[in-house]
Image (cartoon, rainbow, N blue to C red; front, side, top):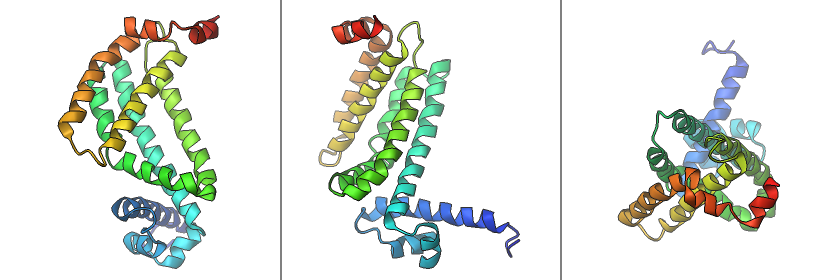
Length: 217
């Protein structure tokens, strides 16, 4: 036992968690390149040696930060999606939840790392499995989002991924177009479209093409 009364393993896990959270906060505050390990250690209130004990390389640290960020996002999306599926949350409110998620801190941190990974091969190779895990988790959530009688899992995944990609594109635009009314108009318009894709003629038309007919056959 340590002086704090916690087992050493629990203390180590708490330190690791603090470092990871500090990494996320520091990258969000100053950007990927300016987020030094010294600044992260100071923000986490740990020694640089303690940081290096848990994360010997910067790539290890960034990967852990992205894993935590995406795991947090997945848990939040899953919880809200279940509320929609159970009928306790209106579909329109689901879009009101998604828009801040994909235009705020969660999205901009992800975008920061994606942009760096475009030209940093080692970083890209480190982060691809993390992002693949995130998208697999989302696909599992989306497959259960719609009533199977209305949309089979593949169609449900496409509809919800279209929705997320719409939000992402809008999120990118916010960097150089800070115009809340513009984005609110887009969100409100999609609120009218999404129910028609899930259980209406727009969805029937979207999946009437030969690619989808062949998949069913």
